[in-house]
Length: 339
Image (cartoon, rainbow, N blue to C red; front, side, top):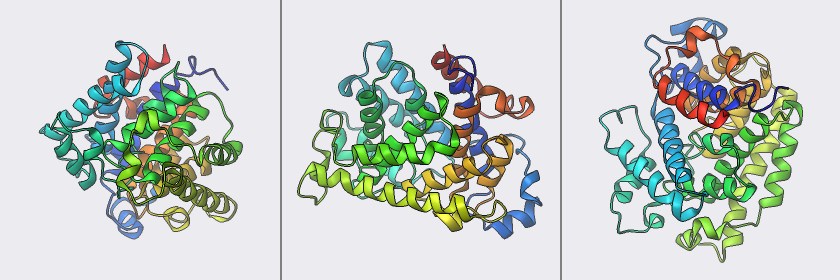
């Protein structure tokens, strides 16, 4: 496997994320039979013209730009990160381009984040574990120079700004970790085992420095019990994923095995399933992810991030990569983190 720099993992992951988003955006909310009736064989699914993305890519860019601003000011810390990321999320919320079927959790949280006098924990939707937090977290797996504590804490903090459920926090952390492992050259065959070990190691670790008193908004007796709920749901879905990899036909809807992806742990698992079924066939992996009964754009954008982190920028056909929406913004961040 090429090194992180030489294969351009960041450019590959961000491009793959946006391509998956653009491919899955028109198929979201459709059944597989409906998708096949409209588009024909899923293995021939064409990138739409124009290749418009959803809020998934928009919020990924918002997070990436916010973290870039924070790191331009020094080491990434909770205090340094919160304000610029919060401002980017609010800018997205107020943008006329925010017309791509955004999730209710993000809209509600960002409406509260607008009030700068209120702590961000007041905005966090503590009972929401929608996939909106981990579908945008890939940048934190791609930025070089972060410690494990910074990456995990930042992944959970960016989730907590909108999705405060412990499973949203844990799934965001696990998604960023998966991207990082693949960017560093981890082999797909061993990935699920590495993710399970990481989840077990972190099961009772609450990142208080990054999350503050967020746990008190829930009904758990303490912070360790709060975060353990999230990791336990992630461990359970990893068991389902491992079973699916042994039993699922690539021709059947992956959502039948690991869930439809509307919630965080299912989006992670189904995105991973599509990647692991076709780890060396980048476009086929995206097409499989986009031809699903569930949250097709989020599943496909996660699949694209995993494939791109693993194989790098050259994984994607030039004729696709060159015409995806926000291409310049994606390349700017990718080049920064590949340098």
